[in-house]
Length: 121
Image 1 (cartoon, one colour):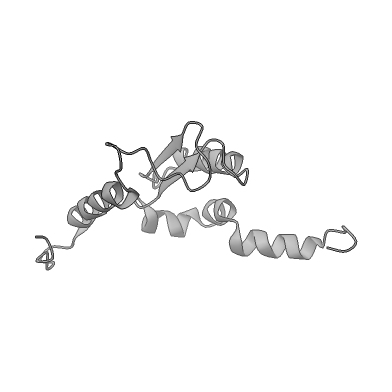
Image 2 (cartoon, one colour; image 1 turned 180 degrees about the vertical axis):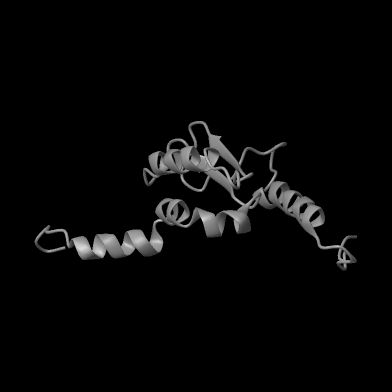
């Protein structure tokens, strides 16, 4: 911080432990089967923290996966900032009003046979 010198060991540590794209690419054979259909990314194309390019690279990797295919989705909001969570279907719609029904659908689709689904009202 004081000198501007980059400690490459710190950079490598962060890459190995916190870089989602790197970790998914590195460990896709073991992580991929566990994540099929579970990755749904929302991103504004004008991210406040300039994360859009990293997200586009992640999208390119995931959409090119095979054995297994990731089976998720990307929602890239045009002219949207950081914390974009999808466009509302009607004025005032909150993010959870869009996301929770999709979560319920996924749970019902993947519930094991005989699972207790009595939580549905």
